[in-house]
Length: 327
Image 1 (tube, rainbow, N blue to C red):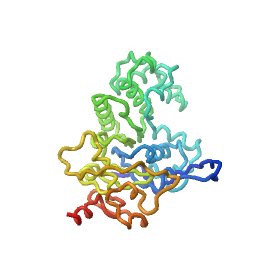
Image 2: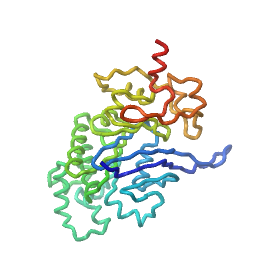
Image 3: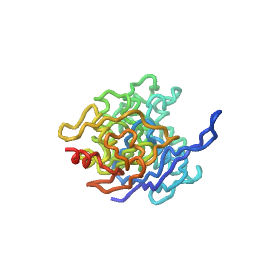
Image 4: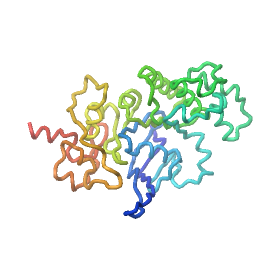
């Protein structure tokens, strides 16, 4: 299977204003991220709030400027692409935003919302009534929903409308930012099943941004774990869940409210809050919160190391060696 999307050493840098006692500068919200999303596959990006996962997704969608690195979509470089050149690609690369109601204009009917992409792209010859019926059926909503307005539908229904709108132009890559946030568990399952069905039917590649590990386990083929704008672990989903290598991954799994009963994981708790990206720790940036940290971690940046089904950046992967030495 070939890579539809190739991200290499991407940096997203923002300017920051200086305060009374400081000068202006910049921060790297995403710092040197590399990953591939294959055609027809699902890639999950996981991390705490502020980890840079949404910023990375917005850079792929052309909503943020990538300062360094390369973003290749079907071999075409997206970084630095002018808006006029990027516009045709918006038929193939679409982003579904986190807030299902807030992202829908309250003044537009569901029909207008889900057919708006045709108008934006200047496709005036389309039968919008017919397209609305087709799109509603695709996401499991009855045709009469076309006449409703966002305030007349539930959160789960609004999420389905968002999916219909995103898939109106038959894209190749769907970027879904927290697709189940704020939904009841049963509705979350329905949404994930809908995405999986549409992926099979349409051959979609999906990039999911989430903090929900149950979502990742349910639907993704590969997963990347982000911390302070960097990937710290990446690999096949089953391999990462079966034996996480980075202590941060282990801590996220241990904190999961619905742990895998078959997984034999050490209990690891995150210590304190994430440091500010304005003042990144030296060495391994996770060492200030890591229960397995050694003196080396405070001074030496870990390199990528291969593991079964993936790779990680840790001097003492998941504390397996440290725990064994202490036993």
